[in-house]
Structures are given as structure tokens and as C-alpha cells.
Image (cartoon, rainbow, N blue to C red; front, side, top):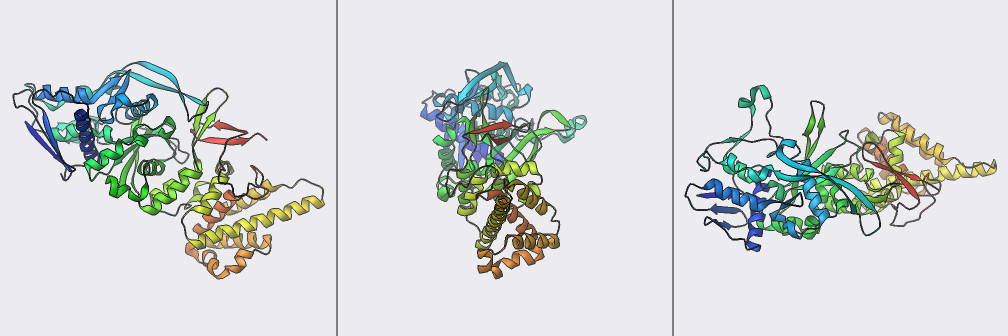
Length: 525
């Protein structure tokens, strides 16, 4: 019996190619582990193909069972993938893979047998913060005994298409139960065999999204693979294979895809590892199927040099935080990074849509918790000079406006109320629904501030953003970005912090978890 798998097969989807990479990785690890091969099993691999063969003695099922049992194992109730050399992985890294697979491919109870729920605590970072976790301890799971689906009653490998369940190919499910025969998804048995190994090559994230209303979502990252050997080096590198539990969280689809694509040096990722794109699928609860997670969204994320450079700034300055709560620790995800990463993943300006998404005082407060990180983004990110100047002008206008408020309060022997002016500016921007209303707002805002040096020096360059109708939404986003990123005296969450790069610390602040899994920072001082 001989089966040939080729990346160039036109019937392969991204998930099939991921399965081929997962098979390549698994077979390579079997060689490294020097496992004895029964039934004269052998394989030949190149960077594009795998040829798998064994004795043609009518025992195809026995061979496939042996291979699946060697590649899909359990360790203390956790899924242990041979291809990732699970026996050498840390406990938290094993838990990441285990929970990721159960949250995406095997989320339905029928795909696994559980012996109960295990509750443990994991150490976060190198500090004293511990996070409680819980996971199903398994007795078995669907990948281990799939050989019977690929073979007939005599144990021979099938030569006709078979129905593919949703756990094998998320999203490819029966559309109408009443018409299962006509609407089920079918695959040649060799293609279904490949799909079994996709979890080895894929990656997983828990989403803590404010922009999506599905509370318990998972992101499944499917790489676009062009070279099997190069991708194996990437998937088995220490950053991905031994990620810490904090790395298991992403704020959105764009964040998940770009984080996966930027674990290594971004400038050479495509050349070194043959990896420049990935597909990110979200799985969440929908109204018509509350009993399981359904595919709710899909992105194709491309990692070119500029996108990766800007995302690296985003990841550096808008980090998730390991926070010690009153009873236990938890991960505080960045709301600002979700907005920015979504834009970068779709090749949009990093600030685009800010005014539409941050459309309430509550959301604006969440955004300003990360004021320092946003300020660093404004200064360091690679973007158009004119847009940067527009934000600078708005920063100066805010500074002079706050200065006038302070001087007037001093004359009246009162405490300056900067928050009221901040709310006035934000609500004024929210009322801008067209080019005319924005023009009225921004000219009034700037004129109230008085003489603005940067505006006077760059008047002609900036007037296009104000006067041309096609730019009004962009300018509104930039004005709100300026308000959220202003770090001078008078901001509501701290004194002037200068130009420090370490903006986002959580010292002296209480972090509260909201119902949607996004966290807010409340100043205790």
C-alpha cells in the first residue's frame, strides 16, 4: 500500500496543507525517537511531498491504528502530540495545546471521553502571580481510533469518499440534519487522513475581545504552508512549542494571526520558514446552536515587513498584564491592541475606525487606561508624517486648553476640572456625523486653544485633512487618538509622565474583570 501526499494537490485547502505539515512533523519526530516500525512501514519526505507505504497484506487498518496511536497520545489526561515532542514540554505548554484542541477541533463532547475536570494553578511570568485553570482530563479522543472510518470491514483502506464530521474540518458540517445525505461534507479517505494531523501544525488562542459579543471564543490559526521542512522548524521552535500560559490569550483575530506570524524575526519569516500568511478562524456561540462553538468569522492575515514592524510596536507598548486579584491572578488583555491589530491584519491604517468603535464614555475610559502605550505608538509607529502632525497639533491644542482651565481655576481658588473638558471634546467628536460638522468642531477646538505652533508651521499640509470631505472620518479618528494618547498634565489617570517607555504598569491600580473578559484599570490613588 502506498499513498502520496503533495502540497500542490489542487483539492487541498489550507487545513489539508496544515495536515500535511502536521504529518511531516509527526513522522520526523518518530524518526528522532527511533521508534520501531512494524509492518514494514516506511516513508520518504521532501519539502513538498510525503510518500507513505507499508506491506499490502490486507492489514491497512492495523497499520493506521498503530500510526495514530503513536502520534496522538495522552499524558496525565492531557493530549500529547508526538509531532510536538510532548514528553519534553512544560506542563503549561501541554495545557495550552490540550485546551486549544478541545476548544476548536474537539469542542463537542462526542469527540472525547473525559474522566473529570482537573483544577490547578499555574505560575505566571517569574513573579508570585498564579492563575487558576481547569481542563477536562481525557481517557481517549477521536483521533486515536479513527482508523475504522478509513477502512472497510475487511481492514482495507477505502477507495471511495467518506463523510467528514465537523470536528475534523471545523466549518465543513451538515447544513440540514433532515437532509444529511445531500448536505454532508465528503472527502477522499487519504484527504481525511491528512486532516487528522492538522492540529499538530495549527495554533490556538483564547479570545478576550471587546469588539465581538461572543464571550467564550477560540481562535484557530491555520498557517499557509509552502515548504514542509521550513515550517516544521517554525512550529517546533521554542517560542511556539513552549509558550507560557499568558501567550495563550489574544485580544482579537488580527492579534492572534499577527502574534503567530511574529514569534520569530519578522524580516526573514517568509524566506526562513516559508510562512507569510495564515488563516484565523473564530469559534463562538451563536443563537441557533448554543450547545457548541460554531465558526463565526475568518481572516486571512498577511505578514509583510511594515505590518509586522508596526505590530511589534503594538505588542511592546500595549502588552497583556498578569494581574494579582483579590482572590487569584488573571490575564488582563489590551483593548487598544485589539483595535490596532484588527486594522493591521486587514492592511488598514492602524488607527482606522477608532471613533466608530470607541463610541461611549465607558469604552473611551477603557482606551485611556493604556494612554502611555498609545502615546508611544504615536511616537514610534511607521505612518504618514501628515497624520502624525495632525495628532501633534491636537496634543498641543489639548495642552493649551487644559492650561487655560488651570489658570482660570487658580484665579477662582478652585480645583481645575480637566475631566469635564475631556468629556466635552469626546462627545463633540461623537456628534460629528459628516464633513461639515467635523470641520465646525475641529476649527472651534483649535481656536479655543489659541496659538498652536505646529499648526501655524504646517497649515497648508494639514488643511487637506480638515477641508476635503473624503478625509473627515480619518481626521476624526486622529483627533480621538490624540485625546486618548495625550500624556500631559491634566489627564485623568495620572500626572505628566514625560517620555517614559514603561507606560503600562499596573502598580497601585486595581484591575477589574468585566463580563466580556476584558479588564479595566481603576486608579486607587
